[in-house]
Image: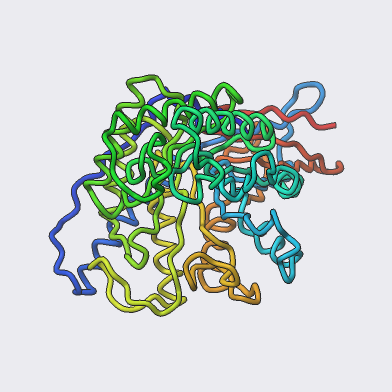
Length: 450
C-alpha cells in the first residue's frame, strides 16, 4: 500500500463543516437522544454517497470498435479503498492461538487492514535482538491475502516504548539509538509495511530527552515537536513512500486535549515535518459512549489541518460495565457494543477526512479491555462482528448485475475500490476485466470483447 492512497500530506482534504443540529439535549431522554442521533446519521449517510462513491461508465466494444448492446455485465467489488482493520498482534506468535485457522478466517472475512506491534521494549528486549523474522512471517500472510499492514508504534515515551537497556545512556545517546531504531524498522519493512504510527501519545507523555521517567506528563509543545520532528524525518528518509501517522488519545472526549494536539500538529506543519496522517484513539475514557456531536466535532476540527484521519484504536466493550459520558445510559452489553460500533463506523465512514478505522482486538480470548473483542473466547461472532460485516461487505459494497444499453454502455455508482467486471456478450463466453475506481481517479473504461 503506497501513500498515494490518500494523496500527499500537503494536499488539503475537503472537510465540510456540518450544519448546526438542535441542542442542548435533555440528557437521559431517549426520544431526544434518538432524534439527534438520527439527524447525525442521516448526514453521515449523505456523506457516504458523496465522498465514498463515484459514477463510473463501462463501454463494451468488439474488435472493430462497434458497441456491443445487451451484453450481460456483472460488477463485483473485490476490495475497499477505505481501510477497515484490526490489530494482528497474535499473528506474530501464532503458535499461541488455540485455533489459528479459524482466527485467520474470521479476520480475513471482515478486514482488509492489520496492525502489528513494534513497541520498542518488546520488539528489542536486548540490544540487537529483534522480532523482525517473526513479524515478517505474519506480514507475509497478510500480503498473500490482500491485507494492508501497519506498524505501531515506532516512538513512545511510555515504559512499553523505552527498553530498560537504555538506562544509563545520556539523552543524546538515547536519542541517537532511537533514530537508528526508526530507520532500521521502516527501512527493513519497506514494501511490506508502508504505514506507520511513528509517534504515539506525544501530548500526554514526556519528551524523549526525559524518557527515562516513563510516566505521563505534559511537556511544552516546542519540546515535544523537537523529538517528533526528528522521528518523522528519520522514518521518511528510510522510506519516502511510507504513510506516516502521529497518534494521540483523549482527543474525542476532551476539547482541551484536542486543541493541544491541534497546536502540536500546527507547529509540526509549520516546520515541514513529513506527517502523512493523524491518528485518533477512540477508547478513552474507556466506558464512554461518545455522542455524535463529539465525534463529528473532533473529525471536523482535526480535519482542518489537511491530513487524512485514522481511527487507530477503537474498542467498545461488552462486559457489563456502566456506560459513562452522559449521552447514553445503561450497561455495556453485546447489543450495546454492536449498536455503538455501527453508529461510530457510520459517522466516520461518512466523513471525508477519515481514511481508516482500526479495532483493537479480534477476540475476547486475549484482549486489552475485557469484552472488547468482536468474537467470543471460542471465536464465535458477537453481534458487533455480524453488524460490521453487513455494513462493510453488503451495504458499503457494490454488486450489480445488468446489461449494456444500445450504445454498449453501463453506468453505475460504485464504492471506491478494486473491481472484477465479468462481461458476457450474447452467444459468447464470459470475459473478466479488472478495474480500480479511486477517489479523483479514472471513471470511464473501454472493454474490448472477443
